[in-house]
Length: 357
Image (cartoon, rainbow, N blue to C red; front, side, top):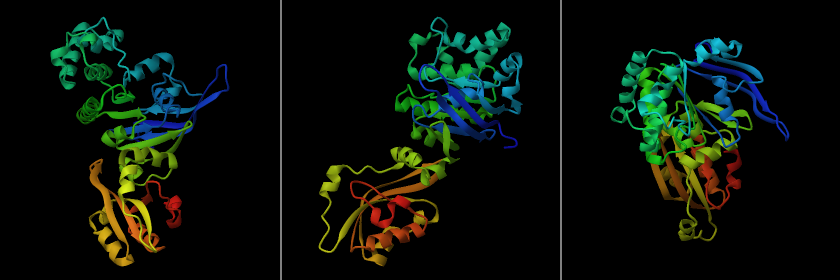
């Protein structure tokens, strides 16, 4: 973890109230490299928001340590903590803009609170608004802005104090898909231009796929899987991660499509397969080769080529027909090449080891 921009070690946080205690964080350890866009993904209640708020100590952990840019945040007194937070910007889901202030006034607000002279505040606002595409909107009020424009104001405000770390708390959850793409592209461009380290939380794997370098998947206050986004998407190890990933790169074969597939002939069985192609085997004619080797018919139901973090992958849905055991042999051979083969649709793959896939 040496040289990391953010180091979280053995974080624990329990909330108590009228009901049973809620353990929001249960021994979380993470490290984020300088200049990285690191995503934390999980369902509601997984602990990801609590974890993010522990980074700038808006939420103080019960145990464990938080180090940001070389400073042990949990060891700082209140005055030192206020100074340290100036190096950490935060973007919120619901914008949190001041309705009575203009765009320029909202961006300048944290500098005003910090006691920065007016001339310096105005100069900083003049630098930031072009970066987020709002130069022409400087005198508008929040009510005059679209959701995407409001979030751009929030991003500019978060950058006002020249932070080196940017925390994004579900920054695109309130936006439509097109605007989400624009905001994610903006965050990544600002990361490159300003040499930021970005830590974001989301419940959407599509957001992780679009912007992140690495990702941690959380469940019940723990990190259950972590790694490069490409690796986690193409080789998810935990069942929860596999469910998340399937929402983005999985195949859902409509029942109508299955109904139109030919029935297996006498002595045949039929299986629906999903094949994920990565690495050297992604350019090999695997489907036709498997058909010849094992005497099975592999009909392509659907397929596409995409990329994660600039690395290409192919995804194909197949309807496989063959003698009992032949499909299993074909699947075993494809897996020996490093391909990920799983079952989809209503037909199970227990006979060929889907549960172990």
